[in-house]
Length: 99
Image (cartoon, rainbow, N blue to C red):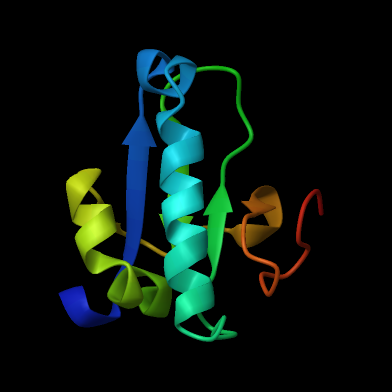
């Protein structure tokens, strides 16, 4: 899988979520997303769960525009997720909010 066309995944622990890292990650991504004109192919999703790992997925374009941010959170390449089972975090993602 080529890194320039890869989906990225960030996994956070319960402690990180409890300390607000998920909110900081989302707020920082939102700023980057909006400052880049809210590109329609830059989508972000979260897996709805109450247990670790708390996973966040970023499309290839989202990963490209937020590369430095995602690197700070230890993002790794992943296969494209089944977005129908995820919650969209970007207003342009299919099924924004609960699908």
